[in-house]
Length: 71
Image 1 (cartoon, helix red, strand yellow):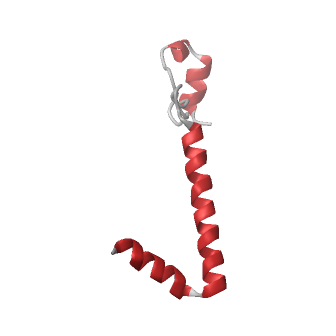
Image 2 (cartoon, rainbow, N blue to C red; image 1 turned 120 degrees about the vertical axis):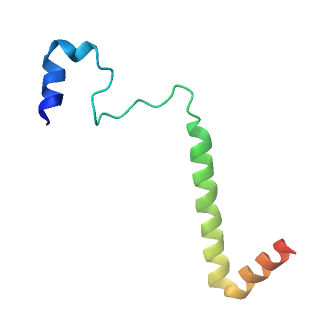
């Protein structure tokens, strides 16, 4: 621990400093964690589907789907 952190914890200046250097700030109160989790789960499902299509029919299926989507 640094000398500054030791002084801030034990000294009178402790109440003046909100977060000592290097301390993490708490997350905002309204963080939509459900949105982060649902996005992550959707990404994992899409990756799994891509690997299944790649394994079953080869790369041509995925390339054909991408080309059809872009046109």
